[in-house]
Every structure is written in C-alpha cells, then in structure tokens.
Amino acid sequence: MPQGGRYTNIIAIVTVAAWLIALAVGRWVDVVALGGFIPGRVLGGFTVVGALPWPLTPLSATLIHADLLHLGFNMLMLVWTG
Image 1 (tube, rainbow, N blue to C red):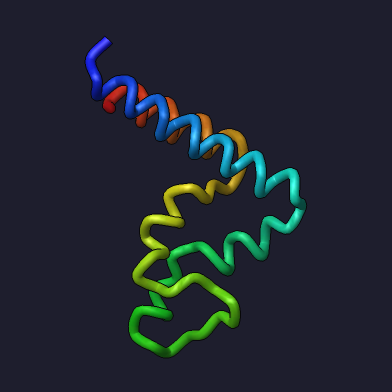
Image 2 (cartoon, rainbow, N blue to C red):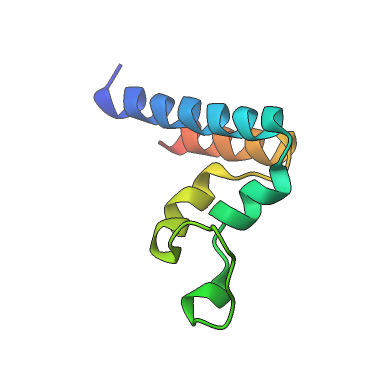
C-alpha cells in the first residue's frame, strides 16, 4: 500500500474516534459550539466563551459531524479520494 493510503486511513480513524467520543460524552451541542467553525467569530461580532481560538476552528471543525450518515459519507469520500 502506498504511504498516502496509510495516512489517509489514520486520518479517517482519528476522525471517527473523535466523533464517537463526542457522542459518548453526550455534550454534542457543546462540542459544536466550542470547536466548530463559526464565521461570525472571524470578524469579531460573535463570541463563544470557552471556545477554541478561531484560527484553530477550521481544523477542529473537520472532526465535527452532524450524524452517522454525514460521518459515513465524508469518510467514504476521504478514503476513496485520499
């Protein structure tokens, strides 16, 4: 297997694990608010107390998925094209 395929699989596993942990903790709304990308925060018109610094949220938002179908299709596309 080429190295790229191995790293793509690792990214997919980490993403699924992060989603499962957030789901198991049961505080999904908090995870979305604290780690999701919120465009209003970039311009300074919106604040979320305790959230990650906004420059990190484009990366953290890649680990946040709405439901199992959303996660499944994103991982399918990642593995297929990665």
